[in-house]
Length: 281
Ligand SMILES: NC(=O)c1ccc[n+]([C@@H]2O[C@H](COP(=O)([O-])OP(=O)(O)OC[C@H]3O[C@@H](n4cnc5c(N)ncnc54)[C@H](OP(=O)(O)O)[C@@H]3O)[C@@H](O)[C@H]2O)c1
Image 1 (cartoon, rainbow, N blue to C red):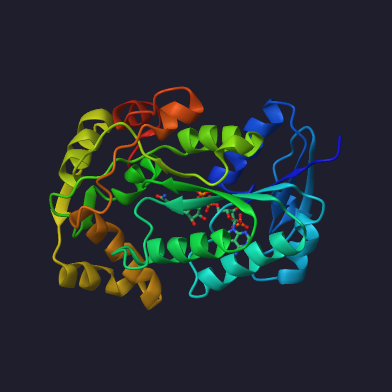
Image 2 (tube, rainbow, N blue to C red):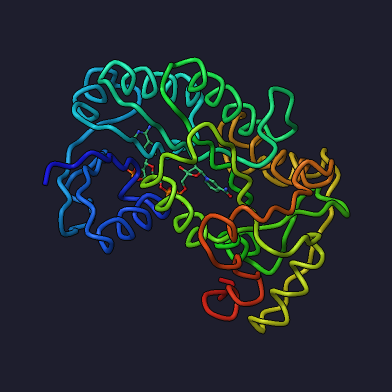
């Protein structure tokens, strides 16, 4: 059977999970990856290469596809341009539907700078003439142990609350939506079941993993200063700092039933996830 669904980011955490779910359901698919040697080997999957900035490669990669799962790209100064190029390539290839991984609270004036990219990508998609589904993912539960590496969660999150969601739950929703056009035109908030502060996350990490984790509620100035030695580009450091600040501002204080409604099961709690996967380095 010729594939009609293209899955980008299939070498990554989320795209790989979605590709495996489609393969398990016996769905033919095309995996669009930067490095074909790292693509997962799955029944019914063909592999093509393409990077979002390369309009011609992306148009070829999407040729003949009806539906595209577009995973947001790695942080880059020109990430928004890359996303727009990939969206335009999908439209030029005749794609009918795009399912895009956005972020909770995506807005032009979002505190989290990367959420602004997501908003403008969403806007570009809405204007493209293709049907679109925006999966506005919360912060990944999967990343909480990494954020706490060294025994500290450190950032200007204050007492703000957020509802982390696992990549498995997002992938469950994505697989359903990719196969069911009745979701076209919708924007889904994919959150976990718990609204928590960073201090509560630190306490949970301590309790469940046995490694003591402290939350250090930095000022914005302290947050930039404590990251200055990493040598990362400004846009990246700003992304890290504002990912905490958006919590403090209450922009991630969203609790949605979209995972349960679409995936058909309750989202995974932070405690359950940490008990299964939560070692802190
Ligand atoms: N909600 C959150 O908390 C959160 C946290 C982190 C990231 N994100 C966003 O969510 C996305 C998916 O998460 P993930 O866990 O699957 O990330 P991941 O494991 O890093 O995977 C990202 C995937 O996208 C591919 N990719 C990245 N930039 C690309 C580009 N310019 N052109 C083509 N392919 C590109 C990567 O290819 P390679 O394997 O070749 O690198 C990889 O397959 C991330 O890329 C990021 O935008 C969200």
